[in-house]
Amino acid sequence: MTTTLPTPDVRPANPRFSSGPCAKRPDWAPENLDLSTLGRSHRSKPGKATLAEAIELTREVLGVPATYRIGIVPASDTGAVEMAMWSMLGARGVDMLAWENFGATWAADVTGQLKLVDVRVIDAPYGYLPDLSQVDSARDVVFTWNGTSSGVRVPNADWIDADREGLTFCDATSAVFAMDLPWDKLDVTTWSWQKLMGGEAAHGMIVLSPGAVERLESYTPPWPLPKVFRMTKGGKVTMDIFEGLTINTPSMLCVEDALMSLEWVEAEGGLKGMMARVEANASATFAWADTAPWIEFLAKDPTARSTTSVCLSVTDPWLQTQNDNFQADIGKIIADLLEKEGVAYDIKHYVSAPPGLRIWNGMTVETSDLEALFPWLDWAWATIKAEASGEGDGA
Image (spheres, rainbow, N blue to C red):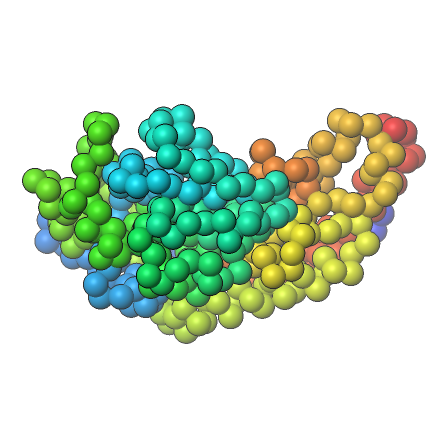
């Protein structure tokens, strides 16, 4: 039999809660894009000017110091992280912090691809941070500020020494614009437009401190670098990359879209305005999750709980009475039901994360849409329990 429970009265106006690519900003419309650079070379005066404007507006909005270099690079955040690691690691020992999929991926690349010898992997299981006090400031360190697949973030940068000898490499793709990043503690910072900006994929951003520039100009890695990773020429940083030219050909449509997102950020109160939007979303989600009896945060420490990629585990004791496959599929079952209803898209846990839900709370998501979603989540769980109990499919 099929159990039909009354559905909530209100639906989210925008059911897009994916953790990447993320929802477009609330006022986004394709007809508002400036298409004048389409069909033009990115090296033309208009193309280069648009790229340079995106770089400088990024600096202005995020408060990146004037002495830091900002570049638009290939292959999204993944490309930005990899080009930094392949170009700069190996000069000294490195600590790799891993507490979710992406940190673990960077650690695997450093040990398995670069085959560095002096590597320490400081890790923790999903839901926890590793012991940050183990990080040695004489070594380089690579870490994600916010673990997109676990919902666990570093609460601050107090564990990073101001007078460190090594460089800090920070994957900030689900933190930048939402969290106040201390630039003085970060030497290499990366992200992509498709996360918090609600932009399009395949383009990454990289920010280099003076220390990172010095490393690039004083250290040559022992392995060959593909063209898309090269940031130096003749022993000097290729400044064109940070002044409006790119290593390869970008999509000017994506650049224009990113530029419009930056203009929206500026109009909506800049970084403080975006952080306030994220905090409002997170407060609403936390308040619901704290009172929902069937679910708990994957992040065990509230101070390390992500405000953007909120990851949740189903903890209703009833679930433990069901078979292993049902338990493993529970995130997909809930997500599929809500997608079928047209009220939530792409909220299943990350593929390698524990079963559950992952709901994006970034700045392009409206708090009202999250508030409309919560009754549907409760409805979905009640419906799944009722149907499984009635038919006996889950037992």
